[in-house]
Structures are given as structure tokens and as C-alpha cells.
Length: 267
Image (tube, rainbow, N blue to C red):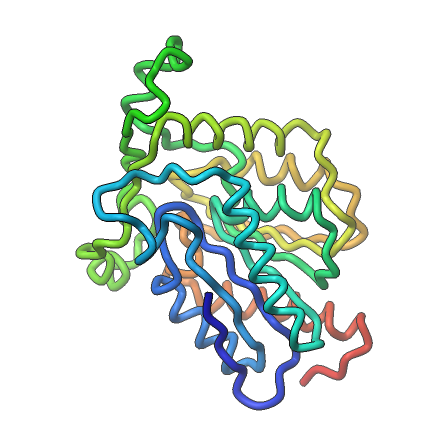
């Protein structure tokens, strides 16, 4: 886990939760934007991700371990005595939805980008084996086939990530089954999210996850304050896209409005 200090006095702390298969290095631009805007940032690689991933091993960690990582990041964020926001992307957004539905921490607000509530792109091997999925060996490796070009249309990011050895979308059948169960629970309408401000960003041309599922989830919640934004032409990784400065500005305004509501003077 890492913590980056704000430039000047911190207005709040942001906990960043990354998506599946990636790592905190891909968030360097976003981290610097938040620091420059006066926010501390806390982030860690989920278990089995980034440099903690054993070479050649598929992603196979239990989701409860991932949730524990969110818990640890929030505990680190509470040390500062200022409001805490969570910004979670993709798979990380799904995990954060589940985590906060069970552990109602004193979080000022949450931002979800492209949450994994229903996948459009699934592992090709599983697609052909779905009728007999339960018969597949739990530890069998499968490739989710998520390429960088599926995540962003930004040529600079594609070129930079092309040789990223830490990005590896290979999982076990057991892991993917747990993912399906987790998504099903979040979509059931029975898991209630706490009444805290929520902003969901989706991408019009998302190749990974169904943006309509995010709309349905938001309508199921009993929230007094929420926002929704669909970014025209954008791909899945909104903070890697050519529009990322606009995504940041829109999110920043959302956070500043919450801080004002809480009684903070925000410039």
C-alpha cells in the first residue's frame, strides 16, 4: 500500500481501487491530478496483482481477500482526520459496492467508473463451455482475453501498456465462478448500498462491461444524492482515455460539492 501527500493542505483523502488484472502504476496520471488538486491518495495493488503476482500464476485469490485490502486502505485513510472518498474502477467498483454494502464506513462519497456488474466480454474458453461450466476443473486456467485495445482507444496509453508484463488477464475457473456469483448478488436488488453520495461514470463504447447494468443498479438504490454520466465515444478505462481531463474535472466538482455540503470551505 502507498500514500501520496497532497500539495499543500489536504481537503480530503481519496482511496483508489483498481480493476482486475492491472496495478497502481496505471493510475500515476490520476494520482498526480488529485495530489495537485489538494487530496491525499491511498492505493495498493490487490492481492495477486502488480508485483505481488507470482510469475505465470493465474488470478485465483478469494474475493474476501480483496475486500480486506479495501478495508486496510480505508483504515490508512482514516488517520488523516479529513473526509474520505473512494474512487473505484471496473472490477474494483464491483468489489467496493459489495464491501460498502456490508461495512458502512464513514465514507463521504463514492465514484464508480465502468463497474463490472455484467460483462460483455467473457473468456472465450468459458463461452463455449458454459452448459458444463460446473464440470470444469476449478484450478483450470482461462484467459479473459482482455487486451489493452479493449480498454482504451488512447494511442499513447496503448503504446505504453503494450509491453506491460504486470498486466495479465488469466484466471482460474474457480475465480471466474466467484466473479459471476458476486455480480449476481450485486444485481439482485437484495444487497442494499448505504445512503452515501454516488457518482457513476460509464463509457458509451465500453467493450468490457454493460453500461445498462450500472443504470439499473443505481435505480435500485435508495440514495438521496447520486449522479450518472455516460461519456460519448469513450472506452472502458475512462481515466486512460483522451477525455480523461474532462472525466477528472467532472469528478472533482462532484467531490467539492460534497465537501461544501459537509461544511468545508473549498476553493
